[in-house]
Image 1 (cartoon, each protein chain N blue to C red):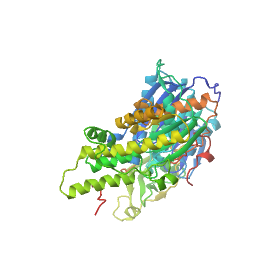
Image 2 (tube, rainbow over the protein chains, first blue to last red):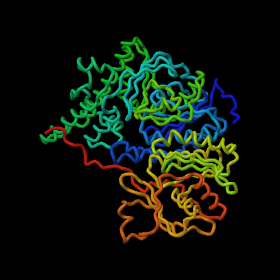
Image 3 (tube, rainbow over the protein chains, first blue to last red):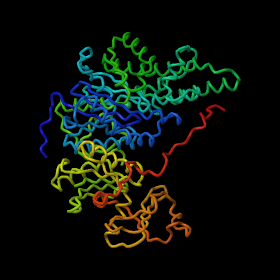
Image 4 (cartoon, rainbow over the protein chains, first blue to last red):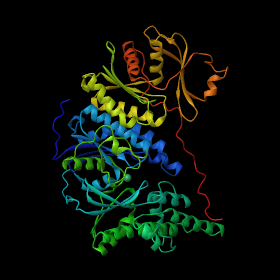
Length: 371
Length: 211
Ligand SMILES: [Zn+2]
């Protein structure tokens, strides 16, 4: 086929993201955001108190074509104008990822365009590079190296990003629940609806964050030796459950606002303590936040206070680019193209445990996760 | 010419034409590699047929029944390929392709097509015959059953000849679409035939952690 030379200076890229419960289709031109279309199946998961993988995967299949059509219309382009397709290869929910991978490959072949299979977590960092069409207020480029704290219902990871397209190192991650999951589980303990984050935020507003001293996971000296940058939230959740049960057993009312505020404070504290420790240890005065939990107002407030105090520059992409989305995947694809990286071959798969240092999946051999 | 994609069992992709039959076809019985191979198979078939997407008149998607994770990959690919190429999507029931192939190879009369649904269950469809143009006449819906259900003497299609299939040919799927189009037969609905609800359990609230 006669593929014309790709525009490598300002590539028009469509990104497909289906790693969890958001069907995200994004279109970017270089670092300019043209569309960030998201169809979420969150409401369908509400009655189960958490994301049900099969429900998420079915929703992706239903939403893909409408979302692509909506994104193309919003961006004011034709599919044939695209320079490349980018897609999340992992990490994420396997069955959900496969929908996006199958669709992206078909689109690439139908349009005769190159395809870039990319890492979801690195995509969260790439989101920071995007700016709205014509908006130059936030056009300062992301500086390297930077520490990135990515917090959502699916992941809680601390990264050292020396270069977005070539050098990303995992410093630590959760060893049990993701922070967003902890919010969901504690919300259920307090009989609050799903998703838990906004609910906890709401009731915590009138609570005392110092009322109850909940544990900070993996912060004791012996844990810090082995898990300096790792997170754990299951002990915190159990501690909240025990507190609630004691009050109930004693026939006393549960101080929901204080529990929510104290729990939230424990999560925010440990997240930022470890992130700022990484900034100090690696002498990196930059911290970038990403992931859906960044929507938490208290997390953003404490992050601002502590980074100010530590002389660390804080970057937070707009919230619509913090939650899972296709624009960040397109943005990372565009960065790879602009850096001269070759496209992925068509054989890559979905890898639910794709390591973060694998920024782009280039061929089948690299994409094989667990045997 | 049609591009046909089916991942209801293994992965199969073909380019077919009503006059020329199956022009190119790729198949893989492995049920764990749909996402990996569907792209290369599409590209291989287009190249072997020496066509570009613009030469197609439609894209055929096998709607199952099939185990969900794999089935979705092919339907996603077919729908999005059709969108990208600006062509019509033609949904076809995957079992119809199996039955069509069996009749074409000489089978006459009633037929029950059976495929693996995993978890000790099977998918089935029942056909009374092939009609005058060779299309299978489905008289029993794609259904989900325990293997023993089909052996019960009281079952509606008990003692009908049974064909257990491990693969679906996208070439035959495409030919079913060509014939259906040529003879004004209805296509299937553009909906995956999971025939099973998602696995979910409603929780009874948090468990106690203290005693
Ligand atoms: Zn994410």
